[in-house]
Length: 343
Figure 1 (cartoon, rainbow, N blue to C red):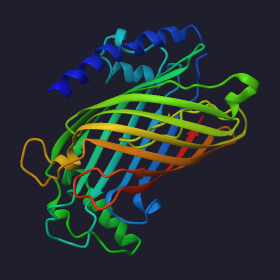
Figure 2 (figure 1 turned 45 degrees about the vertical axis):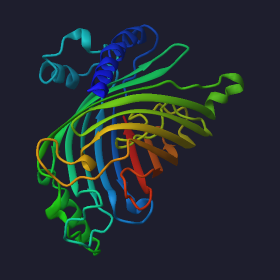
Figure 3 (figure 1 turned 180 degrees about the vertical axis):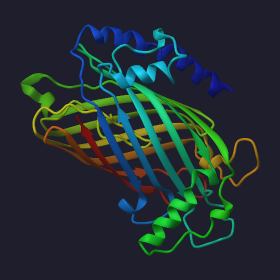
Figure 4 (figure 1 turned 135 degrees about the horizontal axis):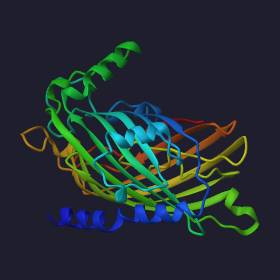
């Protein structure tokens, strides 16, 4: 209950700042007409080469321009019609998301219930949100996002994983009969990033440091998070690192390149205080398999991003995650591939 009250307090006091900051932004920068498509694939085969725990994630997102378009006006008149104008930033991007995550125990060759390892689970969801970037001397980015979906057989985790394993001719998972039950899922995400970009001798083109903080609230995930990302490269574009599938140190779905070719290396850390993780705690409203989660979880990530022809961004991230539950044999490692296109 205390965690819930603290989270609600943060929501009440921080989220409205998106509105006031965005109105300030309207007077301090030229609106960007670019739109973006992001494709993300995360898989443990990209990292450790194993097939366990968070085994795969797919996320497809669309981000509108800052300038209102006919599509945005139509969107506002339909699914956003019930939201008062006061709560909708005037200079913002609207994000639309589709995604799926798949989780398995370490040994997918066993068909019995493995009591001391995490449950099989799938998470299929749609999402929408606002992204606002503040201008002036102290830039910042705020992201407010809602995900709605389903956990359980309806999330199609078994079909996707088994079909893929059959296609690449590797062993198929045998324990999906033990997966979590069907349950509607809801998550509210909020995060704020505040980059430090030195101005001496154009150092902002090769180096920046970005702290971040945020939270998730819902029956799927509830946590507080804080992190730090360092970037070092050539003509670093105006972004906040490559996107990631949450939970994790996510960057931005938009980027503004300074030249036809840019690149940077990055390293980041994030710590999370976890109140709920349905993929470890089990179903909310009925009995299911569960394990004792660790309250404190950390990520270390390193990677590279390349921007080509001003319109394409390619990123690879290698993620090292501390143990998430008691009895976990070793930390997790997985990779994330991102392809972004702007027009």
